[in-house]
Image (cartoon, rainbow over all chains, first blue to last red; front, side):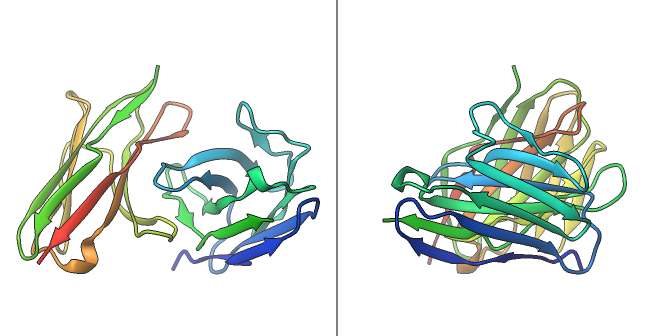
Length: 116
Length: 109
């Protein structure tokens, strides 16, 4: 149980392109979804937290107009990297938690984004 | 401030036992998680401790001492596939997860 699917797994695109990443909870309802960024050999960096039906809460230093997050349903959240540039190249990972007071975060497989 | 400390890297031998320590300082505490992350992959959930003591799950066990702000992950009968980073994360009073930088575990034959 507690499977999170993230798509696509890898994206290579030109500078200026907008890229959408989907995160789906397959067998549970995700009340909260998280978006992380990870640089090579570094720890996870939380970008934003989103609750279904409400605006995402962004961490300090993360541009909300650059990284658009939509959590339209209890099973789907999307992250759109708008007008991506080479410095946006990174490993983006989503996670989701179910209902209940304390739930572990279950992670998607991540998306490796490369901007040329 | 909030802080998680764990060793950067550890090396162990196949078949042996290794203990990865984690100390935490958080505003309030609602439990501690351990995750495993293989290179180039996303983390996978290993364990959650909120009460003092040892939780055993097969070859992996996790221990927590709330009074000491300390946890460890114990891996027994090490296998080559256990080579990965192990992330310690504490849940603070706002139920925000504070992540450690991870411990890279290298298993040698």
